[in-house]
Image 1: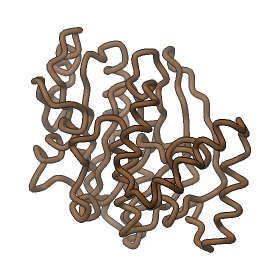
Image 2: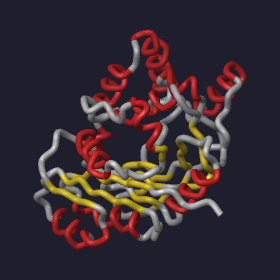
Image 3: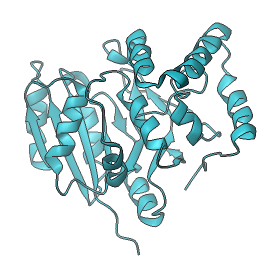
Image 4: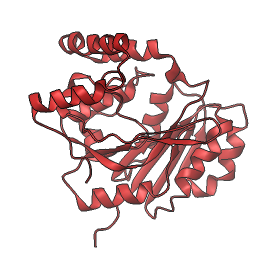
Length: 274
């Protein structure tokens, strides 16, 4: 029987008391036997620290102090866990949640399939009251198109940060997050991951993204500005006009159509499950 790998989860947070406890509970209630859970609070003043203290004995580490933004907090969180930082890594924003059974599913897959270096689940959304909306994508993601930056949210959709997990060796290989990015750091990270490893899509909902008014990802113009900065000039010319095309078309089937065309061109569809 394969031994379950250690999974390190870092939660960056700042003034998210309304949702923080649900996020913490979603990780701790996994009852995963090899969990390292680190909470990096940016000096919250809204009662978040009291919530974190309540769960402190169940956390590997937590701190509440000013930071230079989300990327900085995540990087410091993983550095805090070193040298035994865990075999598998992810971060979970303090308003998102892991879904039941996620960590056991992820741990078993990585233990059984050593050739898998990063994976992602099916997309799920949650409103401010906690109501879930599950969707399922039966198309894979293409390594070459991830590298080119085509999964930027429109056209081919996002690669969801919540519910994406990777081996520590891959994180170290690409050098982790770019601390200069505050909105599109995951987009940039996926591009660099894809230069070394194929993304596997698991046919299970692993985590849910919470839509709520104060989210910084609602500042879409800043996201696309950073995404453009993260792309090499030659790639930027190809990727961003695709976004404009589908924004103009407003065509919900566009991701499926383009994925089909891309598969015929590139001949490399990611497995739908492990």
